[in-house]
Length: 179
Image (cartoon, rainbow, N blue to C red; front, side, top):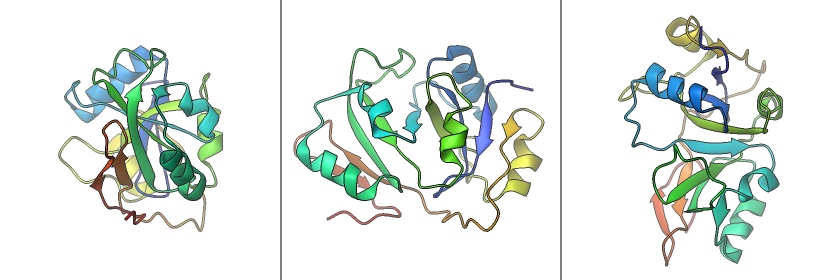
């Protein structure tokens, strides 16, 4: 059992995460997923204020997208700040606030209320689609947070917009359409 690592339902796909500052737990996520450590994790929280300290140069358009689509299936990439954990090896970091009724509770399971996350799957496989699949594949190696009854996961990845470059670039059109 990997104590401080847990799987959870989001509005888009199932995720795996831990406290942003728990480097041992971050390493366990990479181990569980069999993921290349050069692939960064996404930082998620339930409040924008908790996430913004990890980034620099947030333009007005990015803030308007946050206000319009957070919580929701929108991931934004920015240049990372000096407060960003060193295990995020790129000069950028991705941020997201899921729209899920239990996500705030998941964040509050951590000291910093910010999660280092990725999809709940082995690298190269599709993300888990439901609680039963999450329990079957990962229940013996991490805590799986029971889902909210009657909540429908979209199983559509988030839209990703890169604001670390000018002009910004849409890297993936997902559950939210950006022009």
